[in-house]
Image (cartoon, rainbow, N blue to C red; front, side):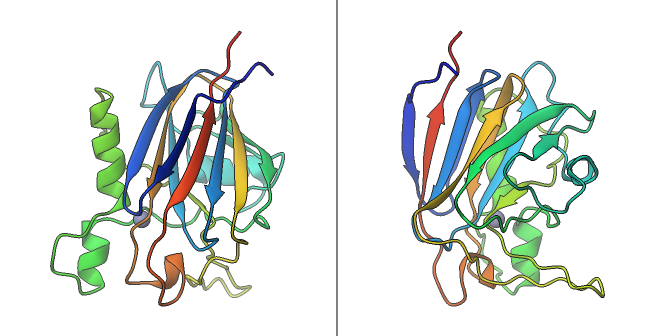
Length: 206
Ligand SMILES: [Zn+2]
C-alpha cells in the first residue's frame, strides 16, 4: 500500500474533524487515556446519500461489533471501511445513536451542550454538504454490552491507554471523527472527564 503520513492531530474532547480520503487510505484512531469514545461516520464522496450504515454492517459482519478483518458497509451494501488493526481489545458499539441536544436535555442539562450530532452536521457543512439526517455512528471504544435477555447498558470503556484501531477506506469518502463530549453518562469513564484522542491519517497515493 502506498501511504504516507500526512496528518497527525490531537483532537480535544467535543471537537470534530472531517477528511476527504481516497480509497485505500489508512486511518488510525489512538485512545491515549483508554477512556475516550470516538464517533465515526463515512459518506461516499460522489453521493453522500450513500453512507456507512450500522444496521447494514451488523448483518454483513454477522456480528454486532467489528473485529480485525471486519468490513463495514453502506446503506447500499458496499464496503466502505475495513478494520486492519485493533489493539484495544475489540470493544466497540454499533447500537447507539450519536449524542445530541435532546440526549443531554433528557439527562438534565438545560444548557447547550456540545454533542456529536451537531459535530457531524457542522463538519459536513464545512465540506459543502448539508446532511438530511444524522446516520448512526460507529462508536469506537464504547462499551455497551448486550445481555442474553436483550438488555443493554452503557459501561466505562475497557480499552488500554494508548491502544488504537486502524481502518482502510474502501471507497473515496468523507470521513468524520467526533470526540464524544458525554460527561453525564459513563460513556467516557465513570466520574471521568472526556479526554483528547490522537488521529493519524495516511492518504493513499497511486
Ligand atoms: Zn457523543
